[in-house]
Amino acid sequence: MASFREGPNNVLYITVFDGYDSNAKKRRITRKYQLPKNVSPEKKEKEKNRLAILLEEEVKRGIHVCNNNITLSDFIDYWFEENEDFLKPKTLQRYKDFTTRIKAALGHKQVQRLERNHINLFYKNLQEEGIRKNLRYKALPTLKSILDSRGITNSRLAKKAGVSLSTVSNLLKGGSTIKRITEQISKALEIKKNKLFVLDRASNTPLSAQTIAHHHKFLHTVLNYAIREGIIATNPAQYASVPKVEKKEMGYYEHETIAKIFKLLDEKEIPIKYIAIMYIAIYTGCRLGELVGLEWNHIDFDKKKISIKQAAQYLPGKGIYTKTPKNETSNRTIDMPDKLINVLMEYKKWWNNERERIGDLWEGIDCLFIQRNGHRMFPQTPARWFEKFVTENNLPKLNFHGLRHTAASLLISEAVDVQTISKRLGHSNPVTTLKVYSHFLEKSDRLAAEKLNNLFNDENHMQVSEL
Image (cartoon, rainbow, N blue to C red; front, side, top):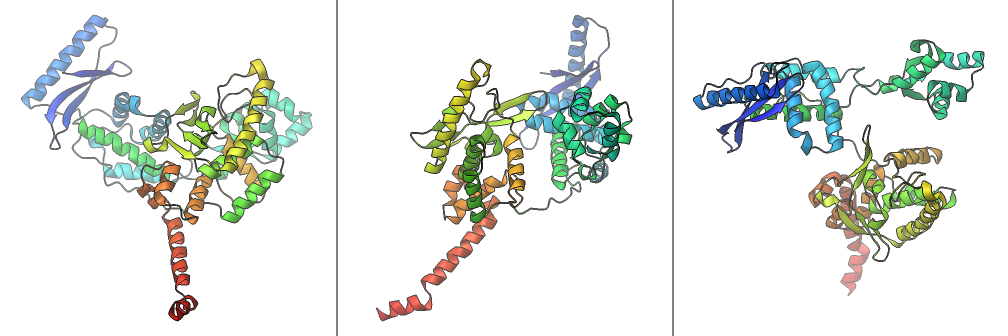
């Protein structure tokens, strides 16, 4: 039985069954057709069925020739049509971003004529400057001079350009911004962009080896699908030269730094919301998305437990949404220490008062961490606050995810067994924990050896001998 997929511009993909391969998997043949324009639905349906019958007949007679004309661009579109319903929103968005670069470089090539050297050249190109889409720009001294000479205040420029006041202030202090903002400001001042802004070199770095590896993984997956569809026999990406991803040592805080952080949280005038965020991150080791995804029904004060059931994410055009955790074991319930419970109880009082104060303007649900109107907090807000907190208090540089590694290191240093650590962190199995935190475990193993050495030192040995 043939299946149909219609693409843009009257393109039709017909797939038919072609027996089983050596691994007992169904082998399918897909061919691309160009349907006539401006025909009635009835004639279109007849033409689809006619083409399907012809293709099935070719397969039965063993004279089918794979579609030599389908380009990589068209086949990627077909791959998305077949698979996008099975992808999580953020994964789908990331794959679409990869597709933009892959199509620009290789999309015109026919799948059957795509070779390893084409792919190698593409990966090499990704390592050059100017590849990034998220380039940023800094203001030239000209911008401030023009504002001063024209008597234009920051707030007036912000209103005229349709940007925030903080954006203008940040630019004038040496900060950077995206291309769209520079265009809006240039238009408002009626001056060419290159007279006011310059590319921020820090944003123009080549893609990381990790990002290129992600491109490779996606392209490899698509071309494997082409094998399954009977278009090619081997995957040209199989032995492509992918830049080696250097393994970086995980950043984390030692006991002394964590003690300093807790002291700062206690002594400084820090909003209780961010105190609660820090306590949860350090005491549970949950991921950032899991933390922002928390709701009050996930907190059991009586049993002293916290349940991780979802993660919050953000995508342009979709907004803030929640999804299932990273894997099956990420859905977990873990115990909370009394210190964390006390902080959450204090935070709950503030939260209740805030909801009552806002009244009818409250639009959210029972999210733990909220915006001013009660809606769920933007997923990156804790990370941005933490970055500022680290800088202001001269703490060692660490990103928010480093608090998860810190939680793991604290548990390991206290000789908590790997099975328990794996469960608290939501790893798929203890092997993952052993692999990710092997360097922490090595340090713990050295301490164990020292304890054994001290247990049977000369003094202790003499005491035993005297007995």
